[in-house]
Length: 186
Image (cartoon, rainbow, N blue to C red; front, side, top):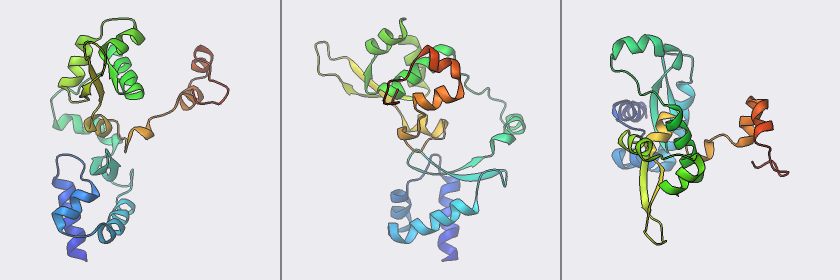
């Protein structure tokens, strides 16, 4: 049992992206019923803020992540400048995340400006993916967020995105600017 736990930790540590429970089962040739309790134990053994790293459930899998409080120090290790989101990139990414699948024309309609360049950059960074073509004349491409988007923002799935109600609780001015509907679903 201790050997199996050691292998699970090693696989999660060495993987370039989050490892799903199904992938771990395939790698270790074990059942979900056998591995799930071990993963749950590891999640409690590696909680956030107790060490310099923790085990997180993100993008449908498990990944060791560094404590965000260590970020200023870790930047010294990697001299590469982190990707900084422009206001346009954040707006576009938010629209796509909440409205996917969505076409470029629909994004541009909501933003009120051309978004082609921003969307290309987000595609190049692996934050967006092409989901197919819309069944309308011209067959425009439909876009959605990628697993890398979930990873970057520490989300297990799109259901973890905050609702408009949660946003307005953080900023009362937002609630006045965009009133909630009577059911409170934004």
